[in-house]
Image (cartoon, rainbow, N blue to C red):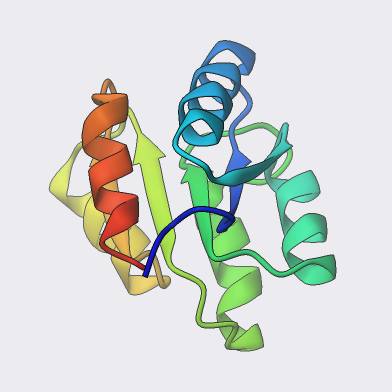
Length: 121
């Protein structure tokens, strides 16, 4: 199955990173929506269907972990890739415990991330 047309939500407070991810993913044929923080990301997840969510760990208003805590009981079966500069094993374990599917430390290669996303489809 192709990844073209698959819907991805990018939740990150860093505008440059959101733009880079959006441009890269759209070039690969993904449909991309953005959220500037955890609160906006949670609202979009509750109101829309996404095939995968790219979620920053540290954000203002609501962290990625807090977003995971809120969506876990919803049982949405959405793969969530946690993106973070917090590369400690304890941080990774906390994210996976709360329902993250993968944990990708920053900085990362956009091409490697694309290859990871392709494995979902």
